[in-house]
Image (tube, rainbow, N blue to C red; front, side, top):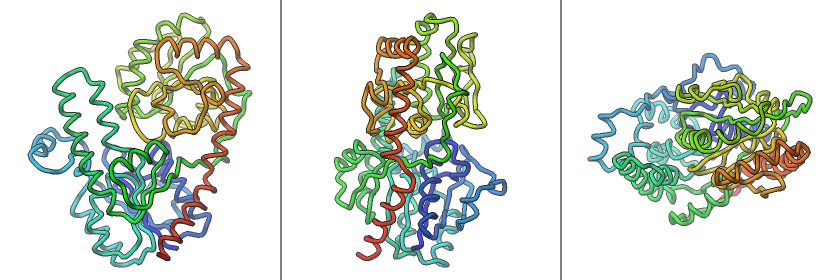
Length: 400
């Protein structure tokens, strides 16, 4: 079985949500003797020096990449208003990248070509022209839904209007493209329902985030208590928005609970405004070298998302590390977890306050929730089980 995977960023190293999902997909398929080729847009926002990639998985694939400047340009955004294209998507298309992909398609025959997310779909016409492979679209989230929810919370009217405009454009594009594939993979059951509402009539299956549990080794002796932590990329608007809300509306009351309580904030592209919150009880660390070690050293994970779509990979990782996670309903969306058993759901400042108070006054409580969390993700998010099921669908498609 020969497959080509198209991505909108290089998934090495696997240090955030999208790269982790793609990386573990590739690793799982390689373990089943699938021949994997990867074509990645090396986007400026997440640019990777491909000459510095040292990874056993990378060494086993046929890799191609093309550098594209995908940064938002005020003039590009303005003139895009008068076109019929989604500016979010069109920034990832480049004629020279298309020529490189065309050469890959001319020189190789693939059984399956998998599009990882909406931002590589602009290359679909080219792929259809130069390949007879079965085509799969994996929706890492419902893109228009992310922007629609952001717009709903935006109070500055001009910005809200523009976010609504972007959302409408994305919805039209997603709706137009969804039935042009032989198979669609949703990342969660709620996203599956959203895709069906878009009018999807092709094959549709759910493949949640898969992780390699060998990477997530828990050492409780290294976990300090009482500690809270938040871990997430701060250049993703929903993360930034949610953390601002928590720090402004909830943290001032939490901080008074105990002089020993510490709240650690970490993540890539930490913006200057968050360092202004730094205090004796709140430590802003920025990007950490080892996210797993960072999670292991802290007790309670805070995920205060107010918008977004898909499935939060960091929650899956936190559950794998036996963390007690306190998250909004939005953050936990799509994860088969149960409030009070393997996660604590909090949607208001009062609910967050009571959940955190419960955890720091009853240490056995948060440890019990963490142990249940590990069992839950082992049941639903194993890399090997996902890969085996994915390969079975590939084989059905190729024979059809």
